[in-house]
Image 1 (cartoon, rainbow, N blue to C red):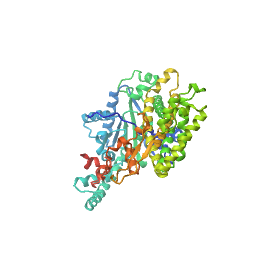
Image 2: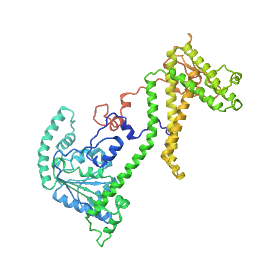
Image 3: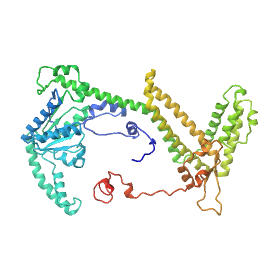
Image 4: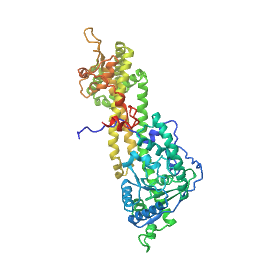
Length: 563
């Protein structure tokens, strides 16, 4: 692979704060009740349970716990085989692709026909799961697969008709294809309705869970696949002491119960064990919620800084007038320079040479070192420097024109904010990587993160102000000469001698933008040709998972985007 430069973070936000940007938040899920406390604390949203349309008559059998995983899977296969002989459809839930494939191999040895639904079958996911309610069907799925598709007892006539229509080489979107689809749909509807009655007689869809998930929500989602709209159904979970949840969070009481003189292939069904499992799940949920809460606490610092930066960018993009702010920034820059070089109480402690060099880098000053030495106090220094700086700024405004200078100010400020914000994100990422080590010094990492983040943000804002003043004070507009090309207008900077000054850091993007607006580019960037923006076609702009523009009905990545 080609070695590339390290990635640069341009923007960052947590999902919680991203959702909080919306004025109104609402959602619907069948398993939100177990997380009601987190919804209330994070989003201030109340969870309201809605009664089912028809009474739920599903039988949720108690869990069966085995000593080892092998005996657990053996019992699962026996249970599936018994249900399969009766014709009852079975949906088996596993926690991983590896476990689903292991169970599939065991079913093949028993000669039980089945379908496997996992990440490797995502193209056929909807087709497989919609037919999981047919007689004698066995579907092995991961807990995440196929959610959002209704399992209709007896089969889904629409899916079957669509499959047969495509098998005959007809397009369902054409008139001929639609007619054939309707014909097949009516034929399959009569068959699936009759088959659905037989499935109800044998007990409906049986959901078998091979392991408890860390979150009760996932278990509830799996159970909820059965007994829709008042249909009958059953569910049961098979567990073992080797399961990850049981191994990490099981109590000593559970091991004591399982350690009794029982054969390995004999399960126990105890209410105490079921309660211990629920406590273990609750422990994991609380731990995960605390992790999310802690991440959110750290992001609150960045969120407040993000609001300030993006509010400032919006003001500039909306065409705000920066004249008054520019004058304020000039005053702040002068005040900061005086505090840096003349912070002592006595004139002998002042570094007037350093102050004069800083002033010369900020604007083309005509003041000499002797003029500064004649000042008896810092207040007098400020008056002399501020008077010259403001007078110079107003002269430039008269020379360039108010509108041109306003455009320059907006462009410069926007580019500086983006540049410094990217650097700040990089520094904050670096700080967060090691902030937890502060705990070894008996310091709260979160408090240290907030304190240093605030200081770094303040330093960034000061840098933006200082660089902005240097840019605005040095930018020059060269009037287009008659013998020059029509597009020869450029923006120039009278860069100070200090190579680290802001006059040498304007990027190519600012050059192109400034040239388009009739102002001039830095001298070192003039020789570079500004290429015209590449206009992407509809094909290039199509996302990989969007419908292909050719009208085939396939995803772009599976059609013309495959190349």
